[in-house]
Structures are given as structure tokens and as C-alpha cells.
Image (cartoon, rainbow, N blue to C red; front, side):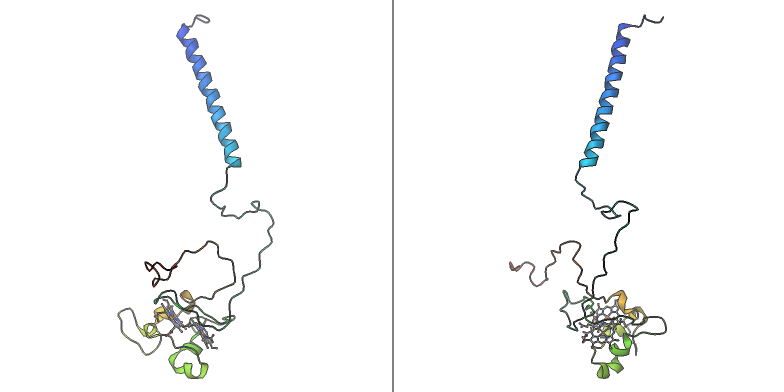
Length: 165
Ligand code: HEC
Ligand code: HEC
């Protein structure tokens, strides 16, 4: 039967070959495009070659000018404007409370933890800081001089809708 294929068969083979060729072309173009396409999403591994040696950038410096910073909204945990280097914060020791506890504020000049910090989750006001406010740095953080990773378009709510920028 060889050499005696139906004429339609030849056309069929041709078109299969054409489809294969076309597919390869699309694939090759895709690969070239993928190599040259602008990288829109930053790689999780950073800009350097994977597994390459990268110099660690220096840690950003904390801002420790002792100036209390305005809150951006009333419920914001105020940021820490002073150094907290080597301050122990463990189950047994809480260096923050040595200054910010009600009974120590007169000597330290630190603002007292606010009344919400004495309330348990049922709204009961306790004699001392509530366990759920014990680990201060879960909410209060320092600021650093690091360059922001993304621009911020945050607006104070007093200005929203006022037409002012
Ligand atoms: C040696 C005393 C001392 C210790 C310890 C201390 N603080 Fe302070 N803190 C102050 C004083 C004083 C201020 C007022 C601003 C200033 O002088 O820096 C302040 C301000 C703050 C503020 C800003 C409050 C506001 O309304 O703006 C926060 C938040 C804060 N401290 C959190 C902490 C945390 C969290 C720790 C522990 C990691 C801590 N502090 C340890 C003395 C202390
Ligand atoms: C669960 C989050 C959270 C934890 C934990 C927490 N705080 Fe706060 N803190 C806040 C928020 C929110 C505010 C502002 C609103 C308020 O007063 O409750 C605040 C306010 C403050 C203020 C300003 C008080 C004032 O009247 O201006 C100080 C000082 C403070 N916290 C210190 C501390 C210290 C010290 C600790 C650890 C013992 C601590 N906070 C733990 C969320 C937290």
C-alpha cells in the first residue's frame, strides 16, 4: 500500500508539519520575549544572581530624637521615639514598664501606658497592665531612616474630602 496514499493524506501530513513548525515558531518567540520582557514583579530573591555573593546592606538607623510623633489616626499605637537597644522584654522582665508603668512615670518622665492597656478583653480595668498589652513591641515600633519601599498616598482623615492636599 506504500506510495499509494490517498491524495487527502498528503495534504493532511503537510498541514500537520505546518502546525508543528508554527508551534515551534510561537514557542521560540515566546522564549525570546520572556527573556527581554520588562520585569514587572520584583524577584523574591532580589536583583542579584541567585546564589551569588551579595554584600549585606547596613541596617537602617533607628530615629531616636526623643520627639513624640503625631499619630496619623487616633487609634494608632504611637511610635517609639527613643532607643530601645538592649531593652529586655521577656516573660520575667519588661524594661518598657520600668518607665511607662503608672507608678514609675513620675521618676522617668515617660508618658503612662494609656487606660486601654489596663483593660482585659471584657473591658474590665485591671490594677496593672493587661496580659494582652504586655509585649509592647507587638504594636509600638521605632522608625528608621530607611528609604520607603513603596511610595505612600496616605491622607490624614481630616483632609479627606476637604479639597486640601
Ligand atoms: C528609661 C525610660 C524609658 C524606657 C525604658 C522606655 N521608655 Fe518609652 N518613653 C520614655 C520617655 C521619657 C518618653 C517620652 C519621649 C522621649 O523623651 O523619648 C517615651 C516615649 C515613648 C513612646 C511615645 C509615646 C507617645 O505618646 O508618643 C512610646 C510608644 C514608648 N515610649 C514605648 C516604649 C517601649 C515599647 C519601650 C520598651 C521597648 C519603652 N518605651 C521603654 C521613657 C522610656
Ligand atoms: C495590642 C497593641 C498594643 C500593645 C501590646 C501595647 N500598646 Fe501601647 N498603645 C496601643 C495603642 C493602639 C495606643 C493608642 C490608643 C490607646 O491609647 O489605646 C497605645 C498608646 C500607648 C501610649 C501613649 C499613651 C498616651 O496616653 O499618650 C504609650 C506610652 C504606650 N502605648 C506604651 C505601651 C507600652 C509600654 C506597652 C507594653 C507594656 C504597650 N504600650 C503595649 C497599642 C498597644
